[in-house]
Amino acid sequence: MVSMRSLLAYFWVDKLRVIYFVVCCVIILLLACKGKDRCATKVFHYIALPSIALLVFLLNPLVAHVLVTNYYETQSLRFFWLIPVSLLLAVVTVRLISGFRCRKHRLLISIVVPIALLTFSNNFTQLRGTWQNLITNWYKVPPVVKALDDWIMNDDSGLKKSAVFPQPLNLWVRQYRPEIELPFEWHRINEQFAPAIELYYIIEEPKDEIDLHQVEYWAKKGNYSYIVLDSREHYKGKLSDYQEVYRIDVDQSKDSNPYDREYILYRLEEEG
Image (cartoon, rainbow, N blue to C red; front, side):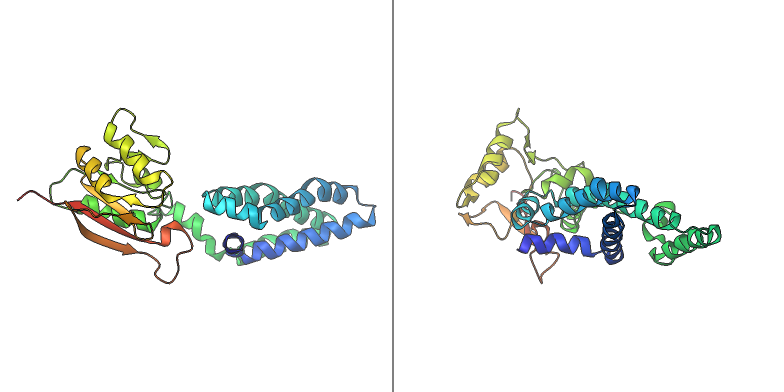
């Protein structure tokens, strides 16, 4: 149920689009039920009905849980909004305008609809950001990754910019700060480097506890200067030669996804 609510929250960010989608489904259903409007019938069978079925499928508690826990939710929701919903909203709007027999009425509605879109467009925030080059986070890198990466890159200790990040944080490091060397990201491992392979299996393979002695041993072997740990994971042992230097929790009120959790950054202590 928590996963389903998470997906619903994504949809509800754009309330007007959700409401208009429901309105379009009702309109096209009413037109199709009359049986005289072949266009409406086709739209209902080939666009509206599949859209509703896809929405029900996505919001099913079991499917929602799989999507959220495997980080596929944003891709799935973007597909739903971009293809079936966008098509349905456009087709129904055009169908409503063409339904007016009087040419003057069609012309008037054709003017009113763009004005309505402009009114509720929120000043085209996204488009203006693109035109004016105001977007500083093009790839929507999670704030926690940006903060950790920036701390590492701004650290003037002279250590090599190499770090061990847990999943899913390591998915974003290369996009934001490609200068930082990683032993692995997602399921891609530096297969030619034994410490990278060992670190992947120690940190990412299912187990009750992560052995920090092993993490430290292989991190030092691989010359990884920084280690990022998820505070919610279970560990045994401790890091002796790495010192905590930074701690971040971007949303202390809740931990609805892995990017909201508290993460701790450790740095290799300099000898002497």
